[in-house]
Structure formats: C-alpha cells, structure tokens
Image (tube, rainbow, N blue to C red; front, side, top):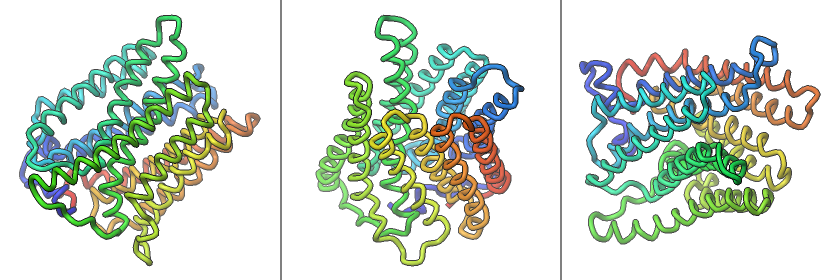
Length: 395
C-alpha cells in the first residue's frame, strides 16, 4: 500500500466531530499536548513550593495514561482502519474513548490512583476490542511489525492490572514494580518499534519494501515475519519479569537492548537513508539514537532506572511523537522551523533530566528547568501545528 493511502484527506465539509471519527488524531493530539504540559508542570510547581505533595505518581500516570495514550489512540485510530481497509470509528466509539481517557486523567489528578488505573484499564480494553473487531473484518493484512503493537497493548493491560492488584497481597510491591515497568517501558517500546518498522522507514526516505503478492502467497510470507516479530515482543516482556523477580536489572537491560537493536537494524537500516537528510530525518535519527542509548543505560548504570526511562521517553519517544505528528498534520513546507526548535529544546531537556538523577544536590532545579523546556517545546509545537488539525486532511 502506498504511504499516502494511510492518511487520506477527509471531505472538508464534514462536521468537525465526524471528521474526528474518521481521523481521531484531530481531537486526541491537542488533548495529549494539554495533558502533557499539565503533567510536566507538576515538577516546577512542586520545587517552587506551590504544590506541597510529591508529584511522582501523578506525573507518571498523566504522562503515560494521558499524553502517550492520546497520541497512540489518535494515530492508531486513524491509521489502523486504513491499513486494514476497515471502517473508521463511530461517534459512540469515539465518545466512549474520550470519556474514559478524561475520566482516568481526572481521577489521577484527584489522587485516586487505583480508580484512575481501573478506568484506564477499561479504556485499553475498549480500544483493543474496537481495533480487534476491525482487524477481524480486515480486507488487507497490516505490516508484520504491528505484532509489536499488540504486544505493546498486552504490556499496558498487564501492567495496569498488576498496579491495581498490587495494592493487596504479600507480593504487592513486586506486582506494582512489574506493572510500572510493563506500563512505563514495555508499552512505549513495543509501540515505537512496531509502528516504526512501517512508518519510520518512509519518513527516513529509506527505499520502500516491495509490496508482497496478494492472497495466499502474501499470507505465507507474512506469517514467518510475524512470528519473528512476536519473538522480539516476548523477549522484551520477559526482560521485565527477569528484572523484578530475578533482581537482575543489568541482564534485563541487556536483553532489551539486544532485542530492540537487532529489530531496528533489520527493519530501519539508518545507513541506507538519504545522503542529504532533511530536518525530519535528522530528528528521527537522533530520537532513535536516544532510544537505543536509553536501553543501554541500565546495562551501564543498572540502578538508575528512572534516568533511563526519561532518556527513552523525552529524547526518544517524545521527539519521535512530535516529529511524526508534524509530518501527519503539516505538509512538507511547514517542518523546518518548528522541528528544529522543538528538537533542540527536547534534547536539552533530556540532558538536564538525566544529569539531575546523578547529582541529587541540584536535582530539583535541573528537573524544573528540564520541565520548563519540555513544556516550551510542547507548547510551541502545539501553537504552530495543532491549528492545522481543523483544516484540510493530512498526507
């Protein structure tokens, strides 16, 4: 399937909410930016004394169950039906997703984390059921890499269920820790690898893989690739179990690093990209470098788990998210200034956030500055790009 068939233009005269049903990114991307800025702002507010509670749990939940999920649902809800030739969302489906997401984030803000996680678990199950129904009615097979998308949701669902279950029982702390690893790391990593194997090759100007023949031969070729991809997903998931129950963060980090590096080298060979990269390719290359470094981080510093997560999240995932979202929303002419400014701010925020965990004396100021830089990057990107979500359809 050609790349420009993934995000086709919507009829311009449709009401906005109806266009959101066909292209959910139009409503979820702006919502994600607002939730992300709100979640990151908790740190400067805390270190300045305006908040008197430590915002670690609330910040993590808002960023993963709010910011991340908005971009995931917005992107997959738009691309998934078109990749499989299935129907787009109905008004009821879109409204149910929005209600559950806002309910989960609002409950976390009210510091009712178990209830918020339970609502988020319902959101994941509803979205998985909606996409599963569409997959069962597909007219085309999705890319084999999308098996990792399924593993991403398996990680998220399992992680949230463990977080909810972790409030009781003798093994509650271990359940909660495994749940956090699956939700905060496994969810993101599988999604980035799975979607990236299809999408980033096109954005990095790599040669398109030849379209497979149709029907029986296509299925025969698809299955072995899907099996190998599933093996990568299973290895990543097993690494989190090893980290918690075998208490071997260095071994677990090595497994994740090798699995992701092998998959990226096979699916996204950066050495084959264009000799004169444009801004979008530079941003994606840099984000993938941060992602790999973040996975290597626990092998070198196994007890700096939070620093590693932020190296992956800010430098890797956030930069990929905003770069891909820019490409989805804008045409080629609108990339350069917004991407360069956003990438520079996110890189500096990544460095300050990671360094802060190594120097506890200045951790508070560094986290505050990193948070402000992240908010400036997200706010500037949103101001420049998000108004386009009400206009013509993306490429």
